[in-house]
Image (cartoon, protein in one colour):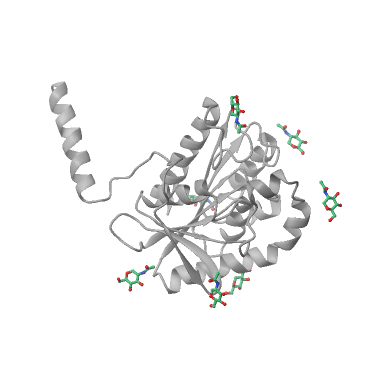
Length: 260
Ligand SMILES: *[C@@H]1O[C@H](CO)[C@@H](O)[C@H](O)[C@H]1NC(C)=O
Ligand SMILES: *[C@@H]1O[C@H](CO)[C@@H](O)[C@H](O)[C@H]1NC(C)=O
Ligand SMILES: *[C@@H]1O[C@H](CO)[C@@H](O)[C@H](O)[C@H]1NC(C)=O
Ligand SMILES: *[C@@H]1O[C@H](CO)[C@@H](O)[C@H](O)[C@H]1NC(C)=O
Ligand SMILES: *[C@@H]1O[C@H](CO)[C@@H](O)[C@H](O)[C@H]1NC(C)=O
Ligand SMILES: *[C@@H]1O[C@H](CO)[C@@H](O)[C@H](O)[C@H]1NC(C)=O
Ligand SMILES: *[C@@H]1O[C@H](CO)[C@@H](O)[C@H](O)[C@H]1NC(C)=O
């Protein structure tokens, strides 16, 4: 086929998918105005980002954030970017209005004290409430979980036989234990960075071995020169970090397109 016809055919396919409002956008948004909406659900502020042209989807994503939480622009844009690939994305405030801000961190916030205010039992409760809301109020049938940093511990906790998450993606998880990885039953994709000490290359290899032994469908990538937090807030002027965010975004979307 001549080149021009190839091009026209490709363009026609692209155009008709766009017209249907469902052509996926595999470019993660790093700047701009978020398009989602907050709703108060049982006292939890939950950010809702809708798929193009619809307000729900049978397969939806639960976004479990880092410590910067729902106020962070990058977190809202990340949720929106996943939503534009045809998923309803639901991102609960895990910290009851007490997410960490850059200003607090610059002023020397003691993170040990902050973590003590947001114990695992409370985070588990919020995630459980959110999963129940997705299934009963929003009519979601399958839930994909994305977890970044702090949230990377919680997706595996609920990707179990009865936890309620059906497929997961985690990037640079914090405080993730081998016991939690051992309890994973659903498909799991992992993104690690060579500069991350919270989930380093050794921890990644251990996780792979556990999942493989347990016959859990998994996939993982190690991003060179990527520090903790790269999938959310990389330094965009460092090419390896910008690449790691973009590539790990595609990693997540491709994972759910195949396994959710
Ligand atoms: C959310 O709704 C609850 C009642 O369900 C109310 O007590 C609470 O103040 C509301 N929170 C916000 C932040 O609006
Ligand atoms: C979706 O739209 C329907 C019909 O307009 C409405 O009843 C429902 O509450 C909406 N759901 C959400 C999550 O906004
Ligand atoms: C944070 O506070 C704890 C006590 O709650 C203290 O032991 C620790 O040294 C503090 N950390 C820093 C970095 O100040
Ligand atoms: C979530 O709630 C269910 C009951 O709806 C309970 O059985 C389960 O233990 C809870 N999970 C966590 C991690 O809190
Ligand atoms: C990862 O961390 C563990 C324990 O903190 C350490 O033993 C191991 O050598 C580290 N691996 C790499 C590749 O840095
Ligand atoms: C392992 O998983 C594969 C794919 O889901 C399945 O076909 C196979 O039967 C499983 N093997 C065992 C030993 O459970
Ligand atoms: C990002 O990286 C550039 C180039 O190395 C550096 O000049 C800049 O200070 C970094 N920005 C932040 C916020 O760390």
